[in-house]
Length: 187
Image: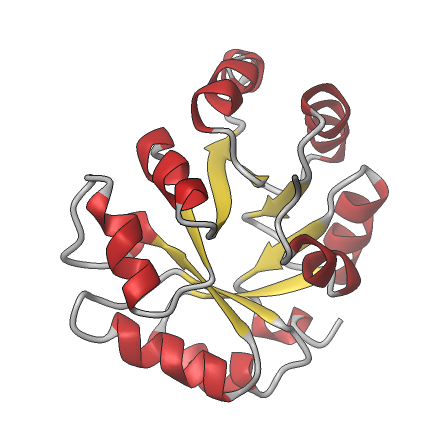
């Protein structure tokens, strides 16, 4: 069964990735409906999620980048209590627990070489994410290969700096594109 946020991602192909709290106001005023939080700490994450919800948007939190969180399954429970709509992680255990809690789960993978790309099938089976975020997101051929072979929606992220990068990734089969470039959030 697919997650309820997948249609939101599909109709909003640009996801604002907020890597610094100072960029949150720009993301909140952007047309992006889903925000990826790549910052914060255990003391502020609930407030940041609350701001996102107050703006009528969805908050997907990168658990590996929130200061003060550990690598244990309980992190997914904590983020759910804070109001997160989804979880991003490179750790299969957090993705599994996030799915158990009905959070949108985003397995972030780094396509650094052919071995890393071929290992995705094994990682996908260990974690069973709702979507896979492939970094860097500017390699359309790899995005197309992963998208067609894994049968899981793909988000292209990392090094997306121009509108052309977004168009190329979407044309290659990505469901949507995440970018920290605030100038592209209105694309």
